[in-house]
Image 1 (cartoon, rainbow, N blue to C red):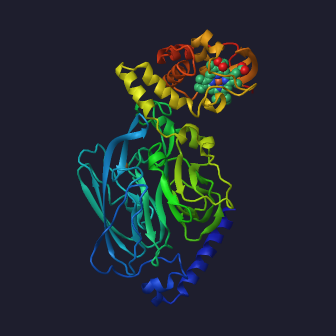
Image 2 (image 1 turned 60 degrees about the vertical axis):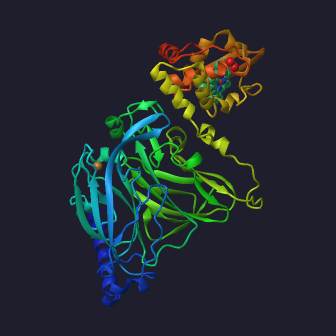
Image 3 (image 1 turned 180 degrees about the vertical axis):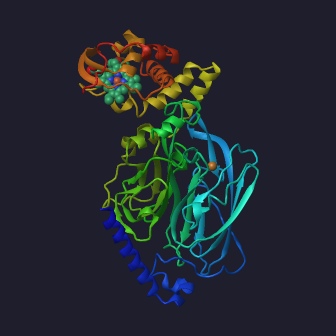
Length: 505
Ligand SMILES: [Cu+2]
């Protein structure tokens, strides 16, 4: 087998060589004219012409404007590494290491054949040395060896952008995985000489997996967890480095009847992304950032350290949800974004009625501010019942409301009411166990019998359970009272009662 594949490779490369040498060599320096028929041709179009150009760098989700040049130029890129604390979720902070102050790093756009003079600076207050490996560079380490930069220093190297495509760049300083896990990646687009087709919107979205010592959404500052990273058990899987980076007020925007191009990267460090936009079909995808497009695609796989260009047309208004279709990552680890399309309905294409709240739960209401306010107040020892209620209300939506409904009325014969529930009023502390351990078997609420199963809400932290139950106790005419984080911790530590939800194996 081994020998077969080696000889097959040899034959293939000989064929490729033959194909190359059959091209008149004179064609190569004047590539723009021939490049449409040879889209993957390497782009040494000769020495740079004209004055050097300072590259426009943009922060996600923005993309620098298209290049309308028809000659190769010298392009100067200045990128600064900044280590900084930023929110990773509402009320949760993380020390990111960044290219240009954002995760993912600044978007770089050059033209095939350009000579790129790259300046990598490392901010004086950095604690670590860093470097950069650009997948669009031909040369050892993709620039890594030439760009190792201590805090307060600057490195410079030059490369020719020989191949067109969308490429990941990342830090490659040891421990490499840790530098990438802390957010050190971004995209560089090498436009074909004739440019990309014009579209109405271009956006920059990049997935990454993150590893914190605390649980998902556990409040406060969260350090990097090397063990979880090695085990490939991410706490967060995110688009653009923060839960909610592209939802709510930060959602990507378009109008109906427009064309949208997404440059979608995946920094990893570990996971591959099954990138999907709920409610859209990709008219065109350049999988793996390669040259030959695929058409009419639902979900495209983006490897760690890879990227794709995705294009589609907007027909119907509404919220389109960007997800990693490894779907627990979307709804339980944060890999979720929104493209908000405004414009008139087209009932012929879609009958109407937005379904995003069904899909999104608490994420359709992205304002979790009350949750972090409550957490901060708790840390300071000043938390009021009102703060708990406000936070609990946010968390109830999409967690408990799925079954017990937004108004707490439940659903007849299936989900018991929480509104004016005599079962709840009889023993509010018992409700803690219901949430943390689940509940099964017969029970009577307000004279009606239920014999169903509530799974344990194990994803909720102690303060989240406390806030939700305090909200429930103080709403819909329930008796009031307060549940604390300590109450929950105590109840959670106890063995599950006999009527807890039992796992079936
Ligand atoms: Cu680094």
